[in-house]
Image (tube, rainbow, N blue to C red):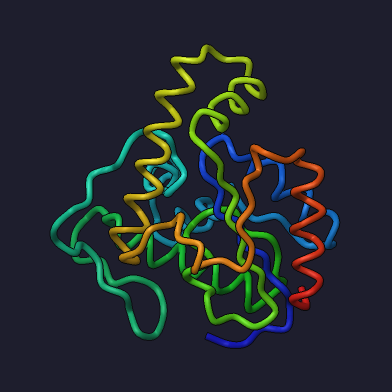
Length: 211
């Protein structure tokens, strides 16, 4: 992994914590690209699978904790790419390609990356800021309902499934709790502050880190 010349901000946001709003706003303020939905597009292209398959294996999809397969269906090729061992790539293959895309972002243009355990993938990266947005479940639920206008029970089910999926992804592949403060430079309860203030905090911290 190279040092890279561009700065990068990673944002880990629990459901309802405003990551999808804070991320693009921080990127705009810092003059960086925002990387979210484009990541599974690249992963799908590299693995030669439909985008729906990559999105189904993406860590932020709120469909409950996806099945973790016991056997390794693909092995990383040391010269790049993936050597297929079975007709369909498994979750580990998606994770390896996602890590590669995240590292290429940091090595190249930089940017603001939402999710994908990017704080762990880029934990030793110079000119980086790793941020966690969180808050009590009941306040995250209220915020998500207010933003979406959807029924409370529907949003609550999605929150629980999404939280389980994200935690399961990080615990399985990285053996740690995504909410652990030690993984981040800045941890903010984004349900206790206006999101504009959260953006100000992240931008200030990013500039202090040389992003």
